[in-house]
Every structure is written in C-alpha cells, then in structure tokens.
Length: 91
Image (tube, rainbow, N blue to C red):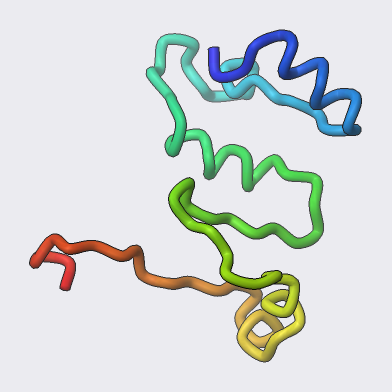
C-alpha cells in the first residue's frame, strides 16, 4: 500500500480525499503500480483548478505561484521543462 491508514486519516483531517487507484474503473487489481506511475492518476483525479506537478527531486527556488498567472500558462494552460540528466543520450 502506498499510504498507511494513519496517513489517510491525517489527510482526511486536512480536507484531503485519498483515492485508491485499484478501485477505479478499468484498472486491474493485479497491475503493479508504484510511486511515479501514480502521478498521472493523481493529476487526473485532482479536485484543484490549478496544479503544480513536480518530480520528487525538484525543489522550487522561489514561490511558484507566479507561474499560474504568466503568459505561457494563459496561452497554453501548462508549463513544461526538460528533466536534468548527465546521460549523454539526453543531452
């Protein structure tokens, strides 16, 4: 399990609803899903009007709220950046 019952209870106290992907239509209960594979599911089922999706190793150097009001977001509805890598195939 991705989250313990205690963690789900804490989140409920913060007005957060936790969903179990295996209780979603079309998702086989034997499909092995973990960590990063669940991010897209979380984005699709988020109740927020605006969402900031970051890699686990990303740390904003400043408050990212300005991204939601910028020209790129207004024009395209999203921002994308390449992932950093030292792999020469990605450079």
